[in-house]
Structures are given as C-alpha cells and as structure tokens.
Length: 411
Image 1 (tube, rainbow, N blue to C red):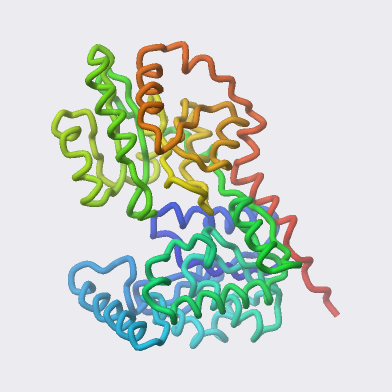
Image 2: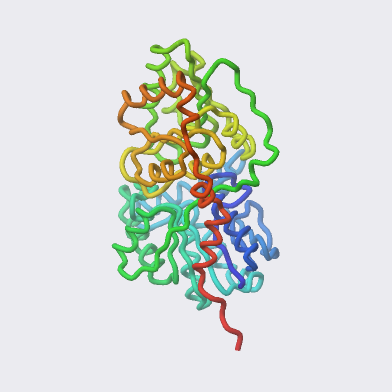
C-alpha cells in the first residue's frame, strides 16, 4: 500500500519528536508498504523524491540563524498579531499553505492510498484531514501529545480564544475523519474514548532501537564518583517540569555523605532558569551540563552511567518521555522522579529501576544515599527481557501496521 506520512518533525531535525515518524517510515517499509514522508524543507525546490517529499518552509522554523533569523521573526510576529486580532495563525501556517498549494504535485509523486498525519504540530493534522477529504482516501491521525487534553501549548490556548477554537475544531475533525486514532499512552486513549464515543483509538507506544546501541563511542567518567545521567531537555520541552526537589535532595546528599560523592551529568539544552537553580552545584562540580550532542553521543552517555534519571512534572501527564524507552535498552538502573502511573508501571514491569515522588525531597535524599553507598541495591534489580522487548520500535510499529485499514481492492 502507498502511504503518505505527514510529519513536520523529521531529520535533519534531531529531536525526540522526530524519532516516531522516522521509525514509522522505516518499519512500515519493512512491512511491505511504499512510504512517502511529507515534511519540511529549508530550501525551495520541487517535490520529486518518492521517499521524502520536502516542501519549503518559508518561516525557517528550525533554522532561524543569521539572516534567516529576521525572516523567522517576521513570521513569528505576524502570527502573534493575527492571534491578537482573533484569527488563528502559527509559525507553521506558511508551511501548511505551501503544502496545500502543491497538493496535486504531492499526489502525483506519492500516489497515496492512505495518509498518516502526526501531531504536533497542529498543521500536520490539518493537512492530513484536508488531503484525506479531498482525495477520498483513509486517514490515520497519530497523537504524540494531547491536543485539548493537557495540551503542550497550554499558554497559547489560554492567551487566545481563537487558538482554543482552532484546536477544538481540528481535534473534532480528526476524530470524525480518521479511520483510526493512535496515541502514546492509556490516559490519552481514555480521553479520546470518553470525549468522542465510538472513536477508534488505540495505543502505539514509543520505543527503542537496539541497533542504535551498536559500536557507540566510549565515554569515560572520572573514577571514584557515582555518575547519574539525564539526556534531553526538561523545561524547554515541558514548562511545568521542575527539577528543584531533585537538586535539593542531591545538594543534601552531598553534605550527608561526602565520602560517597555523586555527579549529575545533564546532556542537552536547559533553560536559564534551570541553570540558575543549579548555580551552586555547577560551581562545586556536582552537576555538569554537557552541550547538545548527536544521538549516538547521547546514547553513549546513557550506556556509561551508573544511574539514569527521568523527571516528569507533578500530576498526571498525557505523555511518557521517549528517553524512558531508550533507558530500558541501555542496561543501567533507572530512577524515575515521577508520579505518573504509566511511568511507574513500565519501570516496575520491566524490572529496570525505581520510582520516587517528584514532591518528596526526603524520599529522594534517602534514595540517593542508598543507591550511592549500597552497591547491592543496583544488583538487586531483576530485569524482564520480554517486558523490555515489548517496547522496541519494531514491536510497536508492527502493532501499528496491524491497525491500518486494508489496501483498496483493484477493480
């Protein structure tokens, strides 16, 4: 079957959000489908490749450096002005218009029999809905995050009623148009089934790729320390994420057990506010912020850690951090500072680590003391290979393949 996969977040964008569509394209091709990825391009050109169709993004959403910064700033300011006047717009609106203007060219190249549209951004869903209706072919809408349920753009929705109306409209149109809705967590599935009775919504988790861990570069940490590693962003991905309780516990542990020093390695981008929270710990060398790295370097840091760290915002969330699935494959103990029930379930069923409340500094301090001073604690884990393998990208994407509508019957 010919599949058109609408995914703005796709390489060269190297983010957690790009991993899911990359794996979709790879494994659906392995399952025998011809997949054309409809994504962004930063240079003008024609949609001539059948595997990757790049449509020019006039706003340069991810490449706003140098002279391009002013073009990006123009589109950003224009979107804000339109929202203030009560008309929905976003930094992705110019790309959406370019895609729809070249729809027939895209159709000639991909000859789609099915469309899979991923969110975020909203415009990916909107493109999928419009093309599905125009071409009268099935649509599968894939939600990596909630749209109206615990939205990642909560501030924008609160600030402008036109954005809320647009999001409500697209969510309703997506469920009405799609033959299948796929989501990444049970709590998001529950929302869709309750908000849209009869909605055909199923879970396809994110995952890990064991092949990515082959021949990783070596990372050498200074001896004599217990090394904790966190990869990826925190507040820059989720503004409600708060690492202060963990940092407070780390600070107290350093005072209580100086003979068993801990070192926290943060690999990736962090906000100025987060850096301010770490000020004292950074000066003392207890925390080290490593610059943004390519995926292989990030995975190498995970492989070299004594303990891998996951932090989520307090309260129920609609998403499980992709890094949790990567950590499962890393072969190292995991500490999830989270009260998310799904995160806890995955940690406990896989036998890979422990969960502690993000609001309980005393419990965190107690755990850090034990994990850094009692080596047998890590050795007491009993990982379940089958439970871990269930979250491989291959298993999850083959599950997705089984949910796709059958190909059209030739006359």
